[in-house]
Amino acid sequence: MDFENQWKSVSEENRKIKDASDQRIWNGLERKIQFRRNSRKFLAIAAVLLPLFTLMGLYFMENGKSSSAQKELVYKTSEVKKEFVLSDGSKIILEPQSELTLAKDFGSKTRTVSFTGKAFFNVAKNKNLPFIVNAKGFKVQVLGTQFTLDQKQSNKVYLKEGKVKVDYRGHSTFLLPKETWFADKNGIEKHFYDHEVERKFDFNDMKFNAAVSKLEETYNISIEYPKEYKNNIIDGDITGNLEKVLQTISFPFNLNVDKKSQDHIILKK
Image (cartoon, rainbow, N blue to C red; front, side, top):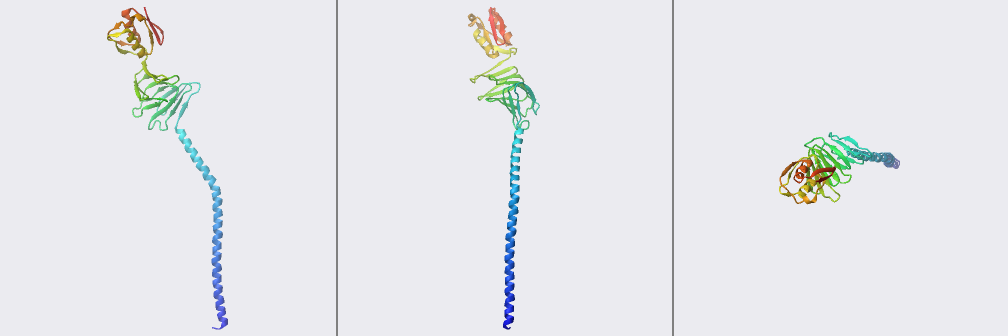
């Protein structure tokens, strides 16, 4: 092959090599350009979507909080008393300045409530789910009954009908109808009955003052009597309400019963 033909051959090969190199360089540039364009698009989309996702996250967080708050029902009164019917059918009459809060699973897994103030509870019967009142310092548990819970001046539970269990400072008290449980500011517990409730008293060989003290404790009442009879002996079992028992123990000494008020009685000649 002569020089001219060799030169043409080499020139064509060099041109092919150069064209191939130029094509590779151009393809590389195109990929970089396309990557930068995609990056700009991604950043632009991210700039739009990030605030949106943030708002959506905040919305679902707040919505979750709201749903949680809505499950915990709170009943309050201000100046007048109100009646509320709970999901289990129980009726609650809240006195002024009282508050009742239901547990989140009230009616399904438990019937637990928190309470402050004063209220009358007419609890629907449910043997499988006891109705429990957490009353800041003590707890009342029932299956289905009517009772009054009062925290205005002291802790007090009055049972109208049914049965009630009161737990206070590790001690449990079971109340009977028309019986009151009471705990004063010093934590001293008492429980007593309405005056019309009949009770059986063992007064065998008991002094008069001890018998009177037993009646005062049982019915939460103050009884005055002539002190000269305090050591006189009473002998016998007596069953009856406050009035009947007082008349029975007063008869041997010719004492008359004078009721001065609901919580004050005088036995006099």
